[in-house]
Image 1 (tube, each protein chain N blue to C red):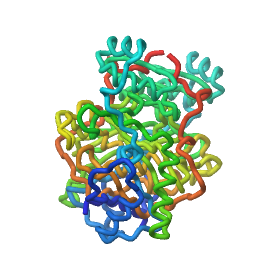
Image 2 (image 1 turned 30 degrees about the vertical axis):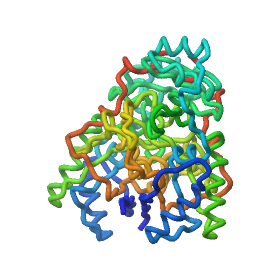
Image 3 (image 1 turned 135 degrees about the vertical axis):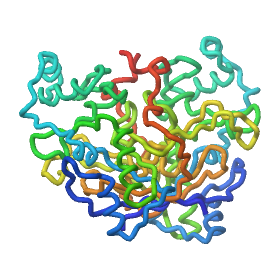
Length: 251
Length: 251
């Protein structure tokens, strides 16, 4: 029977700058009696990755630019937070309500450049990892060094969508995993060629993991077992739609 | 240990108009030795629902309007398919490349109004169910009548995203399930109030199910076990962002 398991790695506590996320994952598996395998997928919420990488900013240290002050006043947002969002962005895509939709330096189009005040501690903001693919690779290498197994790793975040309410989790970074499953050129069972079909399986795996993470349960790592990995070297950058094909980036 | 299982219900063959999808689900479970429970979630690909409801159109019977001919010529699309897309839509949101992004009569903003030529048989197109919440409720009622258990039901489809490549599956219809998990008003472990946090768990469950469905494996039904359901009466319409809050609908 084709079956996936999505397992919460409970018991990972606070993460501090310099901690090895790979080691924390291995410790959690050991406590739960789980042996990691190269066929596994480890999904890690970006927040603990950012914390381990020191991507936390004390808002009191941020001096807002004139542009940040202007946008913050328009949107009734904290000017220091607005400044951080602008620093993390290539461009502002749209503003409205209290929301700034930007394109981050990584190329992600999302609200607030992924800068988040929750689970950060009072007066502090968590930024996205600087290079989430590199973060995923580091975690994978740490796990392999300790266990000999090299599971695929996904670094995830919760993104909103323009036309649907609620967030779904997506892959910011991947290691050891092709993030797309490409059906183009395949045929359905009637012989019809599937022309435009690619599934963003790294995003779907991140979403599956979110179902056991929750937002406040303190479960930042989830193990997904039973998915047949296409383990060619992949990058979450492959999930980004090129600007030339994008009908909604420009105002 | 918090753990989900995502189980492919293999062996469901062709579905014809008038078939009871609920009975097909029960038959598949019986063959696999699985006993359905009210705590389960059954995810059904909309294609078999549409087929059971007769939402299949022979393209040769479609006479394109002048507007369909015009758009089809601009986008190099089949005018009969274009006509079907327009008939299924409230409005065209954006066109470009070979893509028509519309708002369907249900309120879904998606490519081609969900009208699909794959897995339909030659020269035929599959439309979305007319009322996917109603379809989900019917399947749930059929399962309950036969087994006494009333699992939650999600009717799913694969949608593209404006800024990310690849589709992820979403919920078109739900029964027996609150499609959103609302964290607003809750606090994180630092006491910070989660202000804008809702997770679209019905979409995440649909995405998890897609991982074992594939596009051409003929696995249109997936069982998700272990998710703690908020079973208040829900509708997939709750997943639609109201137009007043939408920054990207208008050109």
